[in-house]
Every structure is written in C-alpha cells, then in structure tokens.
Image (cartoon, helix red, strand yellow):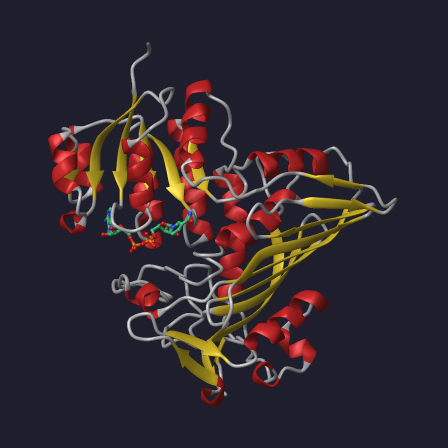
Amino acid sequence: MSEPLTIVLAGINGYGRRYLNAILNPPAHANIKLIATVDPFGEKYDRLGELRKKGVLHFNSLQEFYQSHTVDLLVIASPIQLHAEQICLALQHGSNVLCEKPLCCSTEDAARIANMQRRFNRHVTVAFQWSFSGAMQELKADILAGRFGAPKRLRCMALWPRDQVYYQRNDWAGKIRDSIGRAVFDSPVNNACAHCLHNLLHVIGPTVYTSANPLRVEAELFRANPIENYDTAVLRCYTDAGVPLLFVTSHATRNLLGPMFYFEFENAVLHYHEAPHAVIKVTFETGSSLCYGCPTEPDENKLWRTIETIRSNKPSWSSIEAATSHTHAVAMAQQSPRGIISFPKRLIRRIGQTPHETIVVQGLDSALKRCYEAFALPSELGIAWATKPALQSKVRLTSTQSANREIVV
Ligand SMILES: NC(=O)c1ccc[n+]([C@@H]2O[C@H](COP(=O)([O-])OP(=O)(O)OC[C@H]3O[C@@H](n4cnc5c(N)ncnc54)[C@H](O)[C@@H]3O)[C@@H](O)[C@H]2O)c1
C-alpha cells in the first residue's frame, strides 16, 4: 500500500468539525493520516484530548505548524478573511489545498493565489457544495455538449433564516471588514448561500473547470439584523457567456425555502427544488423529460474527491479560476451604488426565544418570491422598502474597499 496522504486541518470548532468527523472515520480506501489541527481557540474543541491520544498535534497558528512540518493537504475551514493568506502559505510549503468557500474576498487576492498556484504547482480546490456532485458534473457536461441548446437565463433562490446564535458565533459574522480591516464581506452571498451563486456561474462556464465571468452586477442589498453588512440580496448578474443570472437570497425571511433553481435553455428548462430526495429535472420543449439526481451529496465527499484529484493528478473540479468568478460577483455586489438599505423598523419581527431569536421582515418571503418569478430586482417591482433613489457612487471602489454606505428607510 502507498504512503498515507497527510492532512492538517485549519479551523476545528465551526464547520471544521464536519471535516474532523470525516477524517477520523474515513472509508477504508481513503488511506489518510491527520498530522495536526490548527486553531488559536482549539481548547474549545471538546475532543482535543482524544486527538492528542491519537498522536494528532495541535498548533495555534499555521505559521507555527509549517515551521516544523510538511504535509500533503491543508484543509481550510477557518474564517473567510484568512483564506487567501493560508492558501498562499500552504502552497509555499508544498501542500495541496482544499479550502472552504469562498476562495477569498478580493480579485487581487484571487490573482495572487492563482500566481502562487502556478509557481508552486499544487492543487487548490474550493469547496463549493454543489459543483463537486456527480449530478451537477453530469449536467454540466451535457450543457457543454449542447444537449439543451444555448442557455437563455438562469435563476436561483435560497431563503435561509438565521438566528442570533449564527450571528454571535464569532466576531466576523455579518461584517464587511474584521477588527484589523481585512475584507470579510460576510453575507448569504459570500457565505451560507455562496454555493448557489457559484453554481449559477459554474454551470454556464466555458469548460468543465471554469465559470462564466460576471461583467456587471446589479445588486439590491438590505439588512434586518443589527449587522454591518447585508442579510438579504437580489443580484442580477450579466456574464461574458451572454446569459443573465438572478440570485435571490436572505437570512431574514420567516420560512426556509430552497435552494431552488430554474434554468431556461433554448430547448429545455432545468429545475430543482431542495426537499428530501430532490433531483434536478429537465423538461424539453418536446414534452419529454430527464432526471439528473440530487446535487446535494454528503459534505465529506468534497474531501474524498479532492484526495482522488490529488492522487490522480487531475485538474480540480472546483478550481481557483472557477471560484474567482464568484469572488468577482461578490465584490461587484458589495460596491452597489445603492448601498445597503435597512428594512423599515415597522416591518421587523422577532420570533423565537434568546439565543435562538430570529429577526424576520414582514412580507419579505412573498416579495422575494415575486422577484424570483419576475426575474426582477425589488425596486423594479415597486416594493416600498426598495424604492428609495439609488445613491451615485462618486469614487470607484476597488474590490478590497468596502461600500459601507447606508440608507435608512
Ligand atoms: N460548506 C458548507 O456547507 C459550510 C458551512 C458552514 C461554514 N462553511 C465555511 O467554513 C468556514 C468557517 O466558517 P464557520 O462558520 O465554521 O466559522 P466559525 O467562526 O464558526 O469557525 C471558524 C473556526 O476557525 C478557527 N480559527 C480562527 N482563526 C483561525 C486561524 N488563524 N487559523 C485556524 N483556525 C482559526 C476558529 O477558532 C473556529 O474554530 C467559512 O469559509 C465558511 O464559509 C462552509
């Protein structure tokens, strides 16, 4: 048997727990060895003692780890604002990388990471939830082969209410920048529902490994929660594939809905609605139909597929180049000249008990559904809380600067 593939995991207390569970209970064929975990707040992880007994080392920083060790794969489940720095450090030390979404927060950082990857010639995979799935890869292959004709327009909606525990779990949730000024752009678009926007761009990408590039993004951004950034967004994105995309998302609706998508092609429509055993369905103009299975696979498949990619030296299914389109779109949305509009206080409702209290906006669920159905921005539908005149941005912000303008209605 060949040598086990060695792993270090950065970030163990949030989503990183899922990676730890997978790494500690791998399938027989995986042949992996967890060398170390990295987390400055590692003592909060209740199974650290168990890891120590297994001989897994723990470090407070990745720099400290690389001072004395090398490893085949760095898995990153750390805060968004650390991704660029940690990916570059790993590449410099000869590691491959599986990084949780998003890749990073600026086009400059995305370019820096791509340069480092070329220089050090290692795999970097960005863990967007859907694009690694068998169903989505099969679908994309058929889109590329022209099975449905040319894409006309694509839309996706994900309404995921989030409670106060979510916003209070760390010091960067809902932030535009962290305490030392690094861009975070934390929002449903750059974090919880990032997969959906990435997938819109990825399925119409010119190759299996690339996404369409956003040329222009019209974004209407709103907040209900007491946060710096936005918790609700409707984005219309114009791409170099000549296909407009609509993405509707919120953490402030009363009900959970989606993700769901509806893709219009020349000869067919492709639709999906998340529910138990949900599948992607295609309905052709001729009336015939087709099914592609479920794009939501167990989370740990990202890890096993990345390891296969590294071992077989194939290109990454979710490459830096593919993920950079999402970073561009997020940065463009963040610069929306309309700024971020706070929902009127009279529409804010608090449901549930502390700490699971959730802030919701009355009427938001139906307003966002209308946007999705009409392929429209809220202001275009005359929705009262969205119809304040747009602010004109006098200075063109670079993607590393934030558009932290606020309009209170
Ligand atoms: N794929 C998914 O479904 C999914 C779900 C949730 C989160 N995520 C992603 O996981 C990442 C982390 O999000 P989260 O919600 O778990 O955040 P979190 O703040 O809850 O957890 C982050 C962890 O990283 C640790 N950390 C802080 N600084 C660190 C450093 N310098 N080095 C290493 N670790 C450090 C924290 O102590 C914490 O344990 C984000 O990229 C997020 O988008 C993905």
